[in-house]
Length: 304
Ligand SMILES: [Mn+2]
Image (cartoon, rainbow, N blue to C red; front, side, top):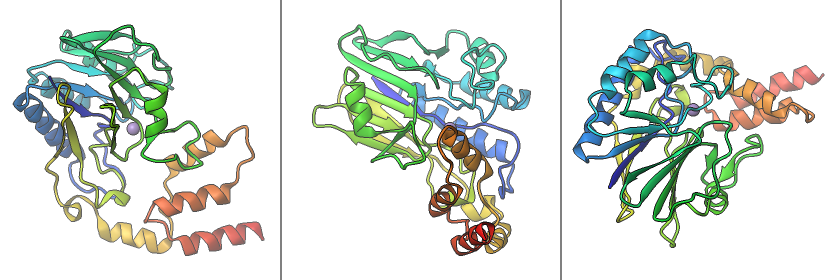
């Protein structure tokens, strides 16, 4: 059977910084492409969390997803990410994620903490953000783990304290033939000789100017042949959707520190001694909108 893998959709109606298009309209076009691709390949859609950017995205976003996903011929299996949750709580009863499940009853399956047979000898197990995935699936055959856990391609950077490398995840969840993860926004695939595979889906949305070169895609996987195909989503050129002049101006001022990223790092650092300089410089390295020279100057001045 065919599976279409995606996640980290981060649907919202407000524009991320420097985006100047109608962002929800652009996201909707991507959702429609995903539906067309899933139907073309007769695939079941797996969503590895963070469908919504926050539980407060509003009805327009919710209604857009409901009406778009209604056109899917097959089922959707999903787990919530922290962005779908209210204050990181497992109780989804006050979230658009739950409304989506109710609106698409029988079609959209929240597989958190559960498992389901989706084809002969193919089972999917789910773990939401914050829930430890089941290490011992009770079934034989092709077991799939769908989880919202941070998995990096190689060794995780120091500030992602709870992340696993793809190899670690494949070892830890060794009773799964296929592991599908969301949370870490950079997509990657690791395939072992033993015919086991990990797919970290990657985000479909370019929501920061550091992603100008990023090509959003979805991943098609056949459970029998284990063939994998990356299918690019059509997107508008970066210069049409981003206000590059404003981004450049900010870069010159050295002011585009990613505040959300910063606060996440600080939260992760609680309990340890927080080294702001290390954190800031490390973030600057991965974000080409930060003027490192200027940042160093500011840090130097702060210390003196
Ligand atoms: Mn995410």
